Structures are given as structure tokens and as C-alpha cells.
Length: 261
Image 1 (cartoon, rainbow, N blue to C red):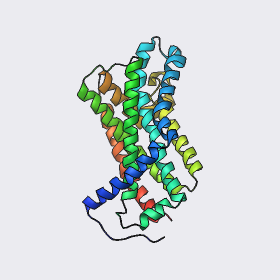
Image 2 (tube, rainbow, N blue to C red):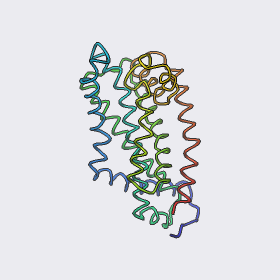
Image 3 (cartoon, one colour):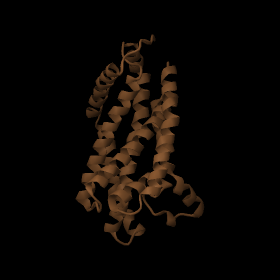
Image 4 (cartoon, rainbow, N blue to C red):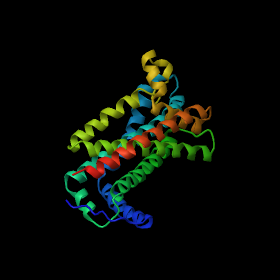
């Protein structure tokens, strides 16, 4: 399929990105599975962990809700990021990506529009989970700016995970395999972290992994911003991880996208 090689200015590139992102968002609106994945699944996880496992993990359900909700919000962006690779792969396998690349638009618009639409979906998921948390008893113990800062950290982490997912989606040929691989690589990051349980309950080897796990660092940063306590050490580690992921996977994804046929 022929590619358009003409260069376009930043304003035109933004306009092209906005047009394709609108198309992607309309797809999400009509895809009930994607909406449920971003909203209902995290709620179900919350109810299971609080009311089924919470009594075995903590003495008080109320305290465990406070501990768990920031972790569930990190899990929400992890789940949502998997769809980036799947949808890119589906577009490629159906020829949609080739058709878009044949149009006189910025080459970057397809990738940037996909990420932009998925960030909107992540933001919706965070708002829904935050409101759901307030309904079941979660309470912010800091201030509005700190809470907004936590949402910003969550979206920054989700943005980085989207680029990993995009690379996987552009590397593997089958959408089903992309979905399976996306599930496999996120599981160790989620369950080998402080997302659901404190690190001191883990065996030493797993605790060593969990302490440097980016999910732990992002979760602990959000807990500090929502509930109070030290934030700087975990925020520094989370920032380094997010920057490192972007430095590696943005160029890799762009490279795979340019070579994709």
C-alpha cells in the first residue's frame, strides 16, 4: 500500500490527530465491551477484594478500602492500556491502517490519535472509579490539588503503558495473541506489587521485586497523594520508570509503525 511521504505542519498534524481520535472515540462509544472493561471490571475487582478477601487481608474493611482504592485505580489504567495494542492490531489486520496511511495526513496521526482516544477512555475510567470509591466509603484525606496530582500520576503511567501495548500490537499479527500477551505481561506487575497487599506480607524474593516494580511506586505515590504520608521517594522512582518506558517504547512503536505492512 502506498504511503504519503509529504510533510505537514504541527497545526495540520493536530487537526488530523483530532479527526482520527474522534473516529476512535466513536468506536469506543459503540463498543460496550470496551466501556465495561474500563469501568465495570475495576468495580467488580474492588467489591471482590474488599468484601471477599478484605477480611483475611486486614482486620477492618474500612481501612482496607482506603488502602485498596489507589491500587485499583492503577489497575484500571493497566487494564485500559491493553486495548491500545489490540485496537491497533485490529485496524492493521482489517486494512484500516493502510487506508489511513494512504491519505494525505500526518504519518504520526494514526498512532497519536489512538493514544489520545485511549487516554480519554482512561480518564473516564478514573472518574468512574473515584466516584465509585466515594460511594463505598473511600475518603481523600489530603486536599484537592493532591488528589488531582494523583490522577495526573495515574494518567502519566497509563500513557507510558499504552506505548508498550502499542509496540506489542504492532509486533504481533493476531489480535487474540495481542490480547493474551497483554494480559500476561501486566499480571506480574499488578500482583507482584503493593496494589492489593502490603509488601511486608510477601516472601523476601518477591518483596525485592515488588519494591522496584513501577506499579508499586505509582500506587504508593497515589496513596500518599490521596491519604497523606511520604510521597517524594516513590514519586521519584515512578517518574524514572515512566520516563524510561517512554524513552524506550515510543521510538520502538514508531519504528514498528513505519515498517508495518
